Image (spheres, rainbow, N blue to C red):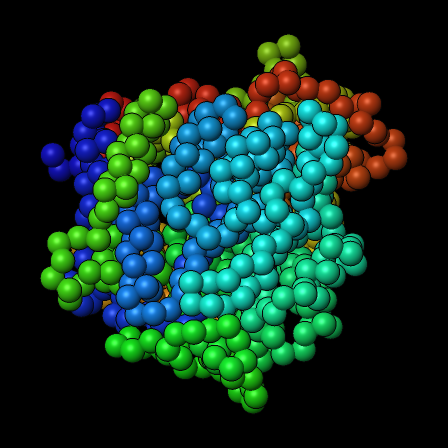
Length: 633
Ligand SMILES: O=c1ccn([C@@H]2O[C@H](COP(=O)(O)O)[C@@H](O)[C@H]2O)c(=O)[nH]1
Ligand SMILES: [Zn+2]
Ligand SMILES: [Zn+2]
């Protein structure tokens, strides 16, 4: 019906978008190169954050978890047919980012069941499994038990509330032999996370590598053909990444100078592939079910390893690159970042084989289960109509197309304690509390979680002198977020500076283009759909589908709303409101005259970052004027 929406037509529209993904048969868009298959191959997911429905508003990332269930099954069959090993691995962060994972209590109550339909070989834990005690216990008592010895948490423990003993949430390590004879020692290592609920413990990497059990595993009594390290940990090991992979790598290398080590990382939400030495590489596969990572390697021989199949599979391309130019190691590698859509899965599965589809019964059941859960959770319910799209980084931080000015307005409008509403207030939030762009058109219950999924409470210090209160935001941004400083973690900014006026495809156009249902159709005009344009240690050919570049503008660590001021601005005192998540940052800025005893709940203990956007959307003319016939055009 030409883009009109009601509660029912919206759902139909969403399904339609999902199935209308770029067609592999259209040569001008989508993958064009077969995957290189080696002796040992991996499919890697990370930072899925509940996006198991796929991206309902972006066809390019529109496959759902059922599609992945089917595709991964197909790929395992293919590996068997050509006589090689394929391992499916995940590196954590399953919650906080979409309604399917976050609209239940606790988070993950239904999405974990959906996630478990994929036949993973190894998994590890993310920091988002540890912020909230209830979620950490669910991970320990259910998720970890479901996966058994495949769930590796080499440095994460929990206080067992039945025995009152500290226990590893999963297994410390796993030694196993692949179908074709490779003997692998695997670990799962979370970065040195400090924000975990206090019923859990994260053992820092330098302590971990000194522990007896770890040394025993590295110096194992049985032969090891490859060390496999999964980690919720940036793939790239440099001083600014906060990754602890370097420490693990050094510890393994001390005992084994030449044995291959393969890392799979996550957490920084990027596509990346780093070479650590001649026989060590590290892959990171993006975020939010936008990317499926592929890594393949060859070079194992029957005399020097347990390998007992062909040296390179026939009838398919094989990995052809040494890790370093002057490498003397026998190992060759290939890596690829697959866009998460059915056309991509189709291309790498059934295209050219005259088969109707790669769907399996379990995949289709999984898709149906997602639809049912979404209906039960009312995720499709429309609460408002966004008059335009607002992005996090594709336009300048202060521009009208950016999400932060809108949210600053939302904070100012609805974060109000009725008994203090006449008192001027600054409301400060971390920009990291916002997780995704907001799209023009129907704004659903799901979208509340997609944009602002956390349950960070609004705290405040009353009656702060204006001269001090008004300086806090600027000083916070100058100092940077505590969490990042502790980690040495700097967000990895792409080195792009695009002027939206002069860029060949201007920022505004790119944004519309990326976020429009018509994006795929418009490829005839712009040739490529905007998306990832990855540069990594192997160069620029990692993206399975070529994209045009999306402008990227940096954002400060914090933003604020301001309310209750008269024309004269702040004179006298103001309420300084902030999220509990950033309380330590704010107190550090306020200085020695203030402590935690000055801080209270601004509204109450349950009013959180999940609540202010729904209130704003329901109250604001901006979001209500397009209702009930909200359109995206
Ligand atoms: O309660 C919370 C928890 C997290 N954040 C933000 O999320 C990132 C971490 O997310 P990853 O997916 O692990 O990268 C953290 O740095 C905060 O910016 C939050 O705002 N509130
Ligand atoms: Zn994450
Ligand atoms: Zn993370």
